Each structure stands twice: as C-alpha cells, then as structure tokens.
Length: 334
Image (cartoon, rainbow, N blue to C red):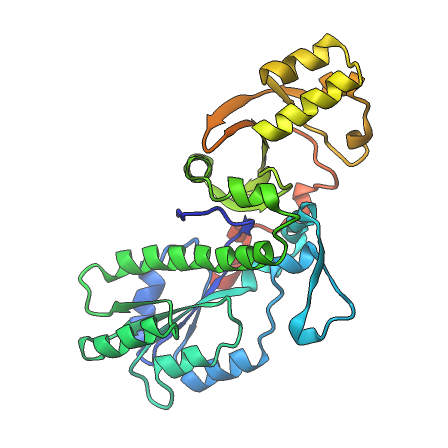
C-alpha cells in the first residue's frame, strides 16, 4: 500500500460490496485479502437503506475545535491538535467506518451507479464493477467523478486487481480526509505540508510500514512523528524533526547556556530529544540530555532526523485497551 503522500492517519476500514449474484459474492469472500474488513449485500434496496442512516465519525473530529458560531453545514476550524488523533486507537468502532463501496453495475431495482449516488459522505470511495457493454458508461461516470475507479468483471486477473485497487482507494479515503484538514488550516500545519509530501519521506515511511507490518498509523505532531501499530497492536514511535526544528532547538539551548552535553548533540545532529509528555516539554534545556536518543538522517527536500522506538513511554497509551484489526476481522467471520 503506497501513495504519493502520507495521510495523517490510517487504519483498516470497512468495504461494502454489492452484487445480486450470490455466487460471485462467495468468490469475493474467498479471493479478497483477509485483512480487509468486508460486508456483503445482494439486495440494492438494503444497501440504499444502509446509507440513509449511516453517520460517519471521521478521525479529524478527534483533533479539531470548530467555531461555535458557524452554521453546522459550514463549520470553520478554529484549532487543530494533532496529538489527539491517536486517541482513535481506543475507539473499538473505528474499523466499522465505511471507506469504500464496490458495486456491480447490472442489478435489478437499482444499478451500481445509483447505489454509488446514494452515498452522501464525500470521502467514501466508489468502485464500479462492469461488463464490457458498460465500459463507456463507466468511463463517463469516472470522468464526471460519480465514481473513483472501475474494473471489468471479465478481467483475467480480477481478484489481484481488485485487491490492489481496494487498498489504493482505502488509502485515498484517508488522504482526502487529511487534505481536507490541511487545506482548512494551512497556517497551523505549515511544516506538515512539507514533510508529508516529500517523496523521500513518503518512500521511507511506506518502506518502514511494510518492513514492520504496520496496519495502523497516527500522526503526533507537525514535524511528522507517528505512532505506528502492527496487527497485534504492538506500538512503534517514529519521531522526526527537520533541519529547521533541530536548529531552533540548538539555538534555544545555546541561548539558555545549556551544558555542552546538550549543545553538542544538537549542533552535530547526532541526537534528538523525545519528550514523553506535556510535562516533559517544560524541562529546562540544561536537562534535555536525559531525553536524547541517537538519530539517523534522512535526506529529502531538507534533512530530517529520526528515531524509531519500540519501548518508549507515551502519555496515556495503554495497549491492553486497544482493539486490533485482527480481532475485528475475526469477529466478522465468526
């Protein structure tokens, strides 16, 4: 799973599949990857009814404060706290959020496009399965943005293609949410606009997720630090600081006449500090050395300095309270 950007967070989300042919739905159940939470429908009307009552609780609600004087349909973001995004890990319902509809076109009652049109959440992705006769119709629907992708059911490698496109569109769901927040709060997320789009960081990040088998990630600050979870909810902390931030830390330590044991690692960029909690952030520079960890350099549009920790404390993190995607998927199939 790779994209041209890194989203503010990601976790497995539910894919809805609709086809009036139950035999084909059974083939999907066998052919789709088991790490994708799926719900299957064979009656279009039931699907239409589902989306009439579906109310998503997007992760951005955890980190934004809205202007209370704004009309509900035109909320204005007043404040963003990225550190709160990770609280979504304690929401056992997060995997139930619908990120994608996969709809067969030719069905009685409502066709696949009409099912797609029943979705009012602008972030949910829509994938249309078509026969050869509907190819022109699917192209037109894609160009008019009624759908986000289409696949012919007769494709010889259908399951392989479908798995790949589903992963791509699930990531797009989170990227659209992330970009919506970033676009509405550009001034406060200035640094973030750089690192999450930097090709060097993007490649590094997705390579890291693959090597550690990461299934969920949540940004922690505007520098690009992340809390990462594997499928067993084992936490990893990717802590990142860019050249500008490292220089600011050094200049502050120098101005406060911190000892050389603090200044030298900041000057040479050999170590970066990891402050475990809000209280730690108030520590005077003279004592920063007790928070230092050896750093590695990532060269991108600017230099980034990072550490990856597996045993560091994090404020209020309790892995025992985290419901994993693996547990959720087992509950669906039991």
